[in-house]
Length: 139
Image (tube, rainbow, N blue to C red; front, side, top):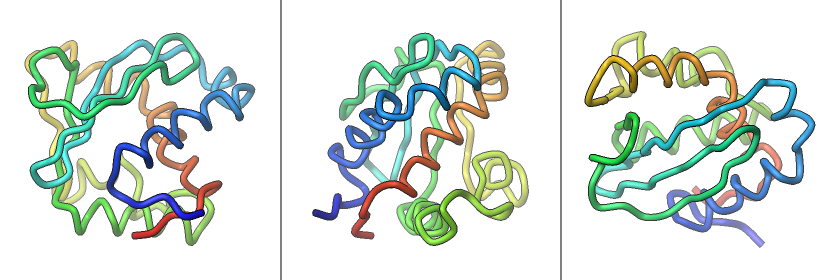
């Protein structure tokens, strides 16, 4: 059964993938952050502890998050679609490329530590999204 993107169920399915593919996440190293994904007006909070995504929820306030990745729904759909199609992000659709080249995706944080966490845990965050390759996603 397809999981709709964007939705809380989509992020919960990715959370489950961090458990199902635990060895892959362990190889990437620990990740301790709570970050947000803003898709249009919707904000999803995602928490990582050590090697696993420990929580996903709809949020209303970004104040307790280390950083937020913001982009219009069309860009998020384009990124997830590329991940599903290519079995992982192609170079044009990585978090790094989208947040730097042309600033199509915006990184928002309250302080330098939030920015640092985005870059420090980039490989884990990208793998989290790349796990969509294992899902049937309805865009």
